[in-house]
Length: 238
Length: 238
DNA sequence: CGATAATTTGATGTGGCTCAACCTACGTGG
DNA sequence: CCACGTAGGTTGAGCCACATCAAATTATCG
Image 1: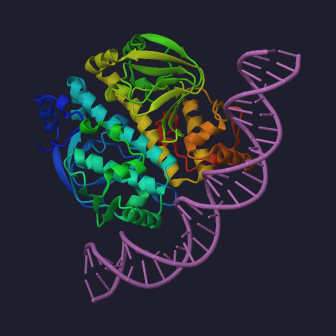
Image 2 (image 1 turned 135 degrees about the vertical axis):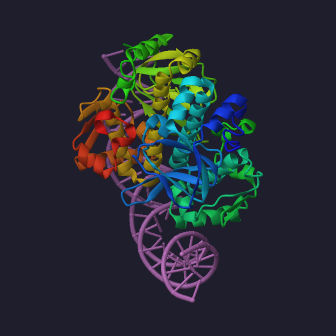
Image 3 (image 1 turned 135 degrees about the horizontal axis):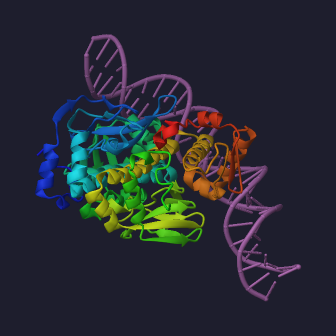
């Protein structure tokens, strides 16, 4: 029940009923986190891996002036810091955007899964490499797209991810981020983010207000943004 | 012998002699590749994983005009496309920069390692997450640093990686890339890359010519570029 | 209801792109 | 061995996308 959204829409069906029960039973406890709170700081030894049951979290790095660069935004169904299991410590910080409910899995349970349940282990590995694929797309976005396209691309990605776990109907969804947050994700100032959102609205592609997104023309937005969802490995969108 | 550089300087000592022999024995064949040739194209099913014995390779994505964004540069000791094992197909292209010697490991050997050698499997997982950590740093670089710092940061990263596998003495090393290549890695035009290299030379921080790098003041360059090597998980540089 | 953060808009500055020219090095074929 | 084509490297002029700075307005929340 807790982990119903894990790999939903991706390769969940490759997991046997037994494996799903093992994963569910690996949760040692469930915690509620406040909005805008730090979960793990860079360098800390990681004793638990965190699965996000509901809410929105982000991973980020600070520059020397304390300005953030988001490197990932996580939604329900994501194993947020499974990276910390092989790495043992993280190279970045993890924080909540909204209030969140998370499930914690102690590292010795994952060790046991590695030893005894190789198919499940491979799916856990797979889920961390989805993050890596998204990281690559973020590099592409920042390196090759202009500001309007970066914003469009980011929203296309979030829409596709949320749709995979039933949080978007393909047109409307909730994304509780502020314009400064969005700027930190897309590599621009909040002022410029504001202008880009206005432009996207004026071009009748999408609108964003108070954390609610409406995709007026998803196909046109994807085209503008050079968004091709194949890197998300979502079954229906392959 | 073939895989002597695998995880060298990182956590190689966690692998038993047996595990190293198993890994070595998993190589089905060794191949020599020409410079500037494509190894794997986006979307192709991945039947082998490629370990880079010697040479330089890169991973990249094209935009709609065919302009490249590099997302990684690989050196000796890297398991270049182990990502393809859990993912089954890649979301990007892989190509050589120089002539390369590679070792191929069929996917069923890795399946066997997953089933029978969980410690080795965890190290393989770890090595793919090193790539993810580097991806995050590239996001940070592109999102938060100006052009001079992006270039400096890139060279600091390459120096640290090459030093870990004995290809840099901390001051001089070979990096057989062109200025257009470097531009594609750092998100700028080759024209601007040229000017940034000139600036770094004039500031007596580093110089680059004909694929030879000299770090005149590595510490100052790292400071300018906000380079902190902890994300590379290199033992001596922790 | 006061404090704080987010949103919005305008004015101005600039970092990096574009376009263009020319130079050098190198590989290839005549 | 030279002629030629091609790719990389270098430099300059001009421009534009985005940052910066500033200020007013509107949520949000203790």
